[in-house]
Amino acid sequence: MKRILDILCDQVIDVALIVKEAERVIDESRFLTTFPEKFLERMWNIQSQVYNLFINYHYNNNLNDDNVNDEMIDLMYTIVEYKHLYRNKSYAYRVMNSLLDIVEQSFIEINS
Image: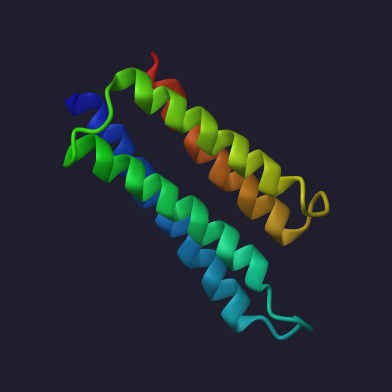
């Protein structure tokens, strides 16, 4: 349990760093013609899911190890769906890809 908890905690931190950086880039951009509200909502949704997974596993004891795998698979599916809503190589696509990399790596670590 401790090992999985550490992995989920690291995942929360890594996702939060990506989201914070993306928010900074958006705030400082001089080239945006429209505010990317949907993109931000999708990032925040992913961040919320990652955080809730950690909380439910650690504090609420609502999840066992198999449930964590199921939740991680659902999360990866959601991120892939979001990623494909954006043009390949666009900033939003790359951010979603980075979030997917974090979750995939956590999934691999949990199952190794």
